[in-house]
Length: 355
Image (cartoon, rainbow, N blue to C red; front, side, top):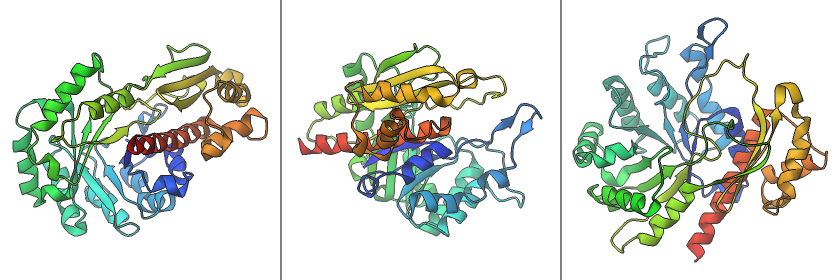
């Protein structure tokens, strides 16, 4: 299974919805519920937590059906409560329960007592097990087993019903072999790692901003894909092969900008075999979205284009390059890029398994 780390914004869930059904069978999304946005003009949150979370379960069903997923609320303010006093985690999973039976809640070592108690209620009610999100620092502290044992005792769960996601976020990957070996040693110290339900390593080398990229085409190495392949190549017979996870075509950081003063550049983030081809245009406020016809043409003629039949994202790129599709909005180009990326990764993983 491929584990894309998604922040459940419109472009991302539309990308999931528009995946081919065969591709969906190999995807286990990790969904971070995004934080409540800030209204810079009124100097307050844009929504109440009730408004922010209302309808999440229905939207998940509408966009992802009854398929499994991990859900994490770590990006919400830990002090937020629903208007009736309920913890947001319990509210979300109560909503999800009415629409899907295959959702796995996520925790980590540093969540506060209220979050853990709310999730304990969820785990007891759903019996879907638990996902534990570990950072690299968690792994190298030396007491990871004690923390894991404490979590299992608190939630009354077994290792066989536990998923472990090692979220490296955006590390310094170099020197790659040394980093991979340090990671292997750290993972080997997790007791019973062979018996957990799943083990995933997730990371990304995607840049935090487009500001440093030049106009036209740019190439960025997919260092997380290189890490995964290096890890596989060094595996000993007694080591567990992890699942692959990444942040698709985004950086893991959450940036809340005052969009009244931001001029985002037009860009198409297109995943290729060992990197991203990023076709960048000028800012869309002054130069509008019509420039996406040429941007799509740049990708289609690059020699790296997968072809219109590859995914709905690729079809959209091809049609737009010919002037047969709308030049859309920034959200359009996020779903297009994520839809292509997920399809690409699932195919790449299938080819690795065939070797």
